[in-house]
Length: 385
Image 1 (tube, rainbow, N blue to C red):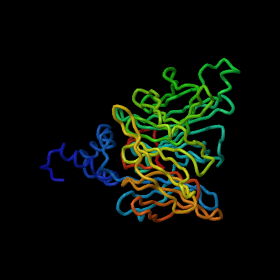
Image 2 (cartoon, helix red, strand yellow):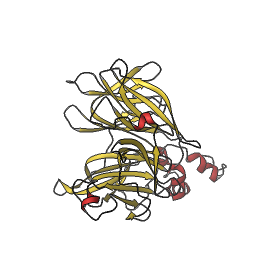
Image 3 (cartoon, rainbow, N blue to C red):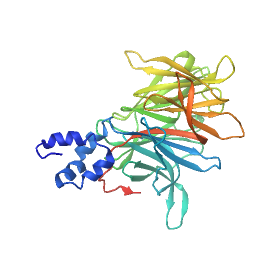
Image 4 (tube, rainbow, N blue to C red):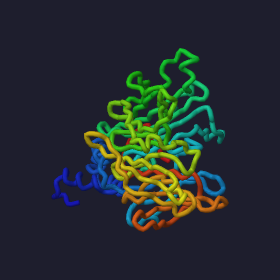
């Protein structure tokens, strides 16, 4: 850039430049290196939505091995794809979620000296795939048998502080057979404090159970959840967690969604959530009038009162379908199955034409989107991978 261009204007321009180019620009001059390395620049760059977006896909291949592939989510999709490198410190990783360009993995500690997996040491690993930096944290121990563990992750949009949340849901019988009055235990790890701490107020009711996966939109983490009323009837709902003030909130669903079967054991009937643009959507899988599996997409509208609007229905191009996410352009990404003896396919569905393109063959697909950022760059406690 010309020396005649004011330095603050240069900074505004560089903030919109792809991450890989920024890493190269650090060697142009000391002034640029100092600017790009500054925490203020990194924080400001991370909240822009003009950077390239990627789709991070995990799945099991036909041989049962866990595989990962990342697609550039632009007009070239799906031609630009690559196999991402994951941190070596964690084995058998599961993708928890993504936020502000960071991915969170949940797995077990791997000892490089013995080449063994320590199944008694759970790790949460936060990584930035754009700059290949990661940091690992030991997750608090499991206290009771049969407890349900939900791990969540998000970056606070106000402080740009990444946080890991571990939610322990104890079995409902424990409040009757022990002196435990609250079946929820919520622990939060903040990058800024470097410590785990336990939340003691504003915990959800004992009758509520949340389930993964999570969806992060702005300052809120969302989950599908269910509760049992006094008549022992199960109802669906949405649970949110505000990452800024660390508070939970219950979001009721319309009657047709609240009473919909929530079990994932039945391929034809299930309820899940996803992110479409900057909105939360409910995915209602059911059978249509012809007995085929379909998925109705409901968008949550934030007004004076929260409401849900049906956008469209995804009809099964094959025997069964499972919607697993959306592209940046809004195109639904679905897992389809045609023949029980053949692997499933991951395809992008076009709602207007009903056409599907470019399958990946495998099982148990999980899709997370992330954008390129510099978050975690320059942290002394991060490792390169």
